[in-house]
Structure formats: structure tokens, C-alpha cells
Amino acid sequence: MRRLLVVALAALMLLTVASCGGSEAPKPAPDETLTKSIEEATAEPAATGDLNSCAGLVQDEGRSCYSRELAAIVNGAGDPLAAVEGITKAAYADQSGFLLANCHGIMHTVAREYALRTGLTLAKLMDSLPRTNDPGCSAGYAHGLVTAVAPEIEKAGPKVAVRLCANSETRYQRYSCTHGFGHAFMRLTNEEIASSLKMCEQLGSGLAADCSQGIYHDYWFAVNGLDSTAKPKDLVTDPRQLCGAQPELFVRVCWYRSFVETAKGTRVESGPQIDELCSGLEGLQRQACVTGASVIGPPDPVNQLAVCAGMEVDTDVIACIRGTKVQNLMNFPPEMSVDLIKACNTTFRGALAIACDRWLGKTLGVVSDGKFRTTGCPELPTAAARKACVAGVKSMDGPLVTFS
Amino acid sequence: MSAPATRRLRPAGGRSGTQPFGEGWRNTPTTLESVLTQSLLSPSRRWAALVALLASGAVLGVLLVRGEDPSAAVAARGNVGLCTNLKGDAARDCYAREVGRELVAAGGRAGTPQAIFAAPDESTTNVVTFASQDDTSAALLCELHIRVGATDESTPSWTSWVAQ
Image 1 (tube, rainbow over the protein chains, first blue to last red):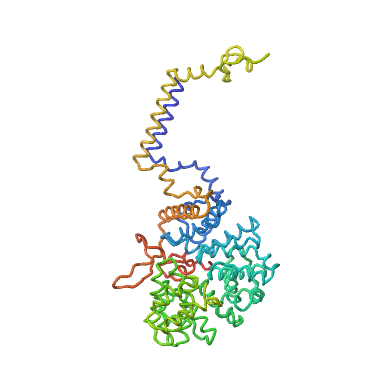
Image 2: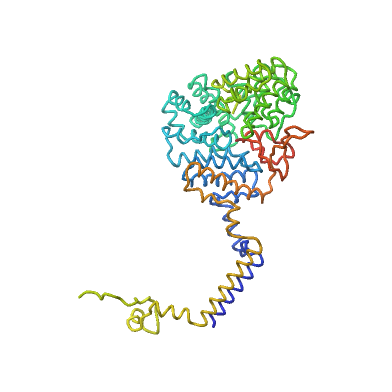
């Protein structure tokens, strides 16, 4: 009878808990709370691959939580590449935009640590790289893998490195591979820009500038202490000082990355604003600055062109057009890319319109792996515009410089 | 000597009576039959089982009334564990779906703002802006671009992370 009472009481307790908030964990006793908070303060939470555990976290805490959980997802995957591509898809679909905005940087670390843990070799690198043109999560993952095999790249030498990237399936993937070398070289030289640039130059003039995108990218990683980078010895955070001291070939890249990485919260909305940001600069420094400032313009590339039209000097307008973010249209219907390049011919006239058609032909060619030549260029209204567009697509195999 | 062709039920073990440990089973074996008989037939245990059954039913009933189907709740939160043994397209689709669910669940609770691509109307064309909720259009792309393009004073500070 006593056992009967015990069971009945237990049942009653179950009923009580279920009907008054039993789905939530009961509050721990005070001493248990104290222990828990001490544990939380001293130990990193174990990752389970559940992004729900990051709910409500922002800034560094949010990114750090996402990094842990995404690493757990990729590390636990039977097919890590498929996991990265699935994550990429989910990031684009997510309305909050948080993962999308942070995925590239997070994946750098996820991939580098994954590669080191699994002993990825140069021989297997290409098989491990994502086969997409996505510049966000997937490209970050690719760059992280390349970074991890830096010592092997150094041993193998520039010829092997060039051959490796040449095997990429698409132009964008080739760019991404080359960019990854820039990151790798920075790790080999303890974040020293000059030495790393020399290594990029050894890849040949066609690849040096795109390789250097990875260098300046990694430099800002290092400035901000991200992705296990070492603080640079000579820390320069003023773009005018930093880029003013770079070799001519890399000046545009330097400014491009400087704006992308340091323009905290700034959004350029007009030509005069760009003019002001780049005031006092001349020649190549001025043009490079204008391109960088253009990149932090409106997210919609059509609106970027409108901003560029607000600049007074033609060389500034052309430099501004070089900052057009065609990548932003990659996940939208192809007609929007056509509308964008058509806007060159409604926003500008004469030589400026042609320069716009040519540059956008080039960059849209990169993101479509050349298909834009037949799917987009023929839609332009004039023969001159079509010709410039095709010439742009044809030039996509050359250095991209102000593109990432 | 060979073993008998058929065997009776083996003792189920345990201790019965007051026999010394290790000896008692030799005299009063506890068989499965006897245990089952006792379990099912004892009035007190029948009552206990009935009460436990009722309690379980009641708990389930309460959960259902509150709309908390446990399996549905887990599915809504996403579960990447379902994807770990998959390969290729199946894995890609699975991760996209489950990570997507996790993001929706996490974002839903956090109530984070979002960069959205607003459909053009007569007054504005292709305006990209921040809005709090309720737009089903896709976010306007990529790491670097959403971050650098969609930041202003009304933008939460996490979008200004300086190093992607």
C-alpha cells in the first residue's frame, strides 16, 4: 500500500509540473545557480551543432557562438562540403541576415581548423574546395582550407600553386583559390605585407593582384585579432598611410579592402560624399580610394550606379563604377543582372556608358563563368554597348583587382 | 551423461525468502513464471500500474492541449543530426533545411533585424533597407556586401563587424 501511495504521489507531481510550465527547465537551487554561472564564466559551452543556442546573442558573442556551432556541424558531417553548401543555402534564406553577414569570416576559421585537424594535404586541396561561386560562406571555407596548407604551398613553389588554381572549375573559383594564397602567404610571413606581396608576385602578373586581396584581407584579420592571426609588427590602420606606401600594382586592392574592412557603419549615399572621403588624394591613390568608397555604397548595384553618376569628374565616375557589387545579384533572377547593365546606358552617356558596360560585362562574366556573354550582353540596346559588354566578359580571365 | 532434451524454466535470479544469499535459489527457485504471476496479479501493483498509466495519459493530454507536440517542436527547431550520415545532394538539402530551421528558430526568439530587399513600387525602386519583421523576400546577398552596404545609425552594431 505504501508503494501505491508513492506511485500515486509521483503521478500527481507529474501532472502538476506538466500543467504549470513543465516544458521549461525547473529553476535550480541557489547554490546550483552559482556553480552554473561560475562554470559558464570559466568554460566555453560545448557545441552541439544547434544554432538555437545562439539565439539573442549579438556582436562577438553571437559570432563566437555561431563559429562554435557551425564548426560542430561541419566537423560532424559525413560530407563536410555538402554541409557547407547547405549552410550557405540556409544563410541566404535566413531573413535575419546575421549568418550571411558573418559567414565568410566564420568559415575561414571553421575550415582552417578542420583542415589542420584532418591533416588536409595540398594534393587533396582541390577536391576539398567548394564547387560554388558563392562569395560568402563557401568562399570563406575555401580560403580557410588554403590557409591551412600554407606550408605545403610554400614548399611546392609558385608553379605548383598556379597549376592548382588553374584547375578550378569556374572563374570565380579560380579567383577564390588565388585569393586564398594571399591569406596563406600572410600566415607564412607572420602577417608581413611586403614579403607576402613578393610571394604573390611569384605567381605571375596575372595573379598577383588577386592574390593580394587575400593579403590585405588577412592584414585586417590581424589588425582585429581574428582567425588566430598575429598582430602585425608595424600596425597601420589609416588607409591613406597604409595604401600610400604600397607598390602601384596593389594600391587599388589595398584601398578596396581598407574600405570593406574598416568602414564601420558608414554607408556612402552620394557622389559628394565619396569626393569628401577621398579629398586631397590624386592619381591612382584617388581612383583607388573612390572605388573603395563606392563599395560601401548602397547594396543594390543599380543604386550604386546612381551614386557614381553624382561624381563630377569622369575618371572618378569610372573608378566609382569599379566598385559596383554585381555579386549582390547572384541569388536573384538573372534578369536583374541584365537590368543592372542596362542601367549603364540610362545612367551614363557616351564613353562613360561604354566603360560601365565593359566593367560590368567583366564582373558579371566572372560570376556567371562567362555565360553572361550570351545571356546578358545581347540584351543591351546599342551595338556599342553590346560590344563593350562582350569585350568585358572576354577580359574576365585577366586580373580582377577591385573584386572579391 | 547427456543433458535432458527439454529444460524447465531457468531460475530468474534474485533473492527470495530468508535464505542465505547464494543458497536460497536452490531450494525455492524464483522463476519467470512466478515473477510474472506476482507482477500481474498482485492487486497493489495493478493499482500502481493503472495510476501510472493514467498519469502518463494526462501528461500527454496536457502537452497536446498546449500545442506542444514534442516531435513537432524538435522538428521546428531543426536537427542537423539527421544529416550527418548523408552524402551529396541529399546531405546538402538536409543541411539547408535543418540549418534553416535552426536559424528561423534562433532568429525568431532573438527578434533580430534584417536586411531585406524591398520590392520596387511607384515611389521607390529597389530600395534595400532594414526592417524589423514580416517580409518574406530573400536577404540581399553576401557577407561583405550586406555588411558594408546596409549599415547606418539605425543598424544594429553587429553588422559593422570589421573583419570578414
